[in-house]
Structure formats: C-alpha cells, structure tokens
Image (cartoon, rainbow, N blue to C red; front, side, top):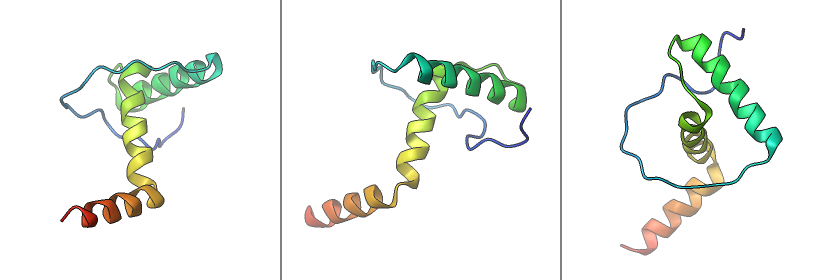
Amino acid sequence: MTGKLSLGPVPKSETVKMAISVSARLRDDLDHYAALHSDLHGTPVDAATLAPLMLETFIARDKGFRSARARRGSQHK
C-alpha cells in the first residue's frame, strides 16, 4: 500500500450528472486507484466518485488553464 495519493478524503459537494467514455485500461487504473484510496483513507469509494475529484485537481493545477481563465475573466469586467 502507498502512504500518499494526490487526492485526499472525498468532500461532500453538490454534483451534476455527466456521462463520459473511457478506455478499458483507464477504467482498470481508476478502479485500482479507488481501491488504494479506500485502503488509505479507511472509507470505501469507487472510481465514479473519484473521477470528478481527479478532474478538479487536474484543472486546479493546470497553470495554463488558470492563466487563460484569469485573462478571460478580466476581459468581461
């Protein structure tokens, strides 16, 4: 078991349903990540619950996206 994952405990949040298709390999990796996350945090969680958190984390860490969003926001003022 690993001692640290990028995602922390799953927060409570309001959600909107969205359907996506992923490769079989990515689905297997998501399931494996969910199992590791469950073991590490002691709370059962599935890949469908973690995938949106992974996307939020990815977007939050993407400097290019943050910069573009900030430029877009300043244009609308």
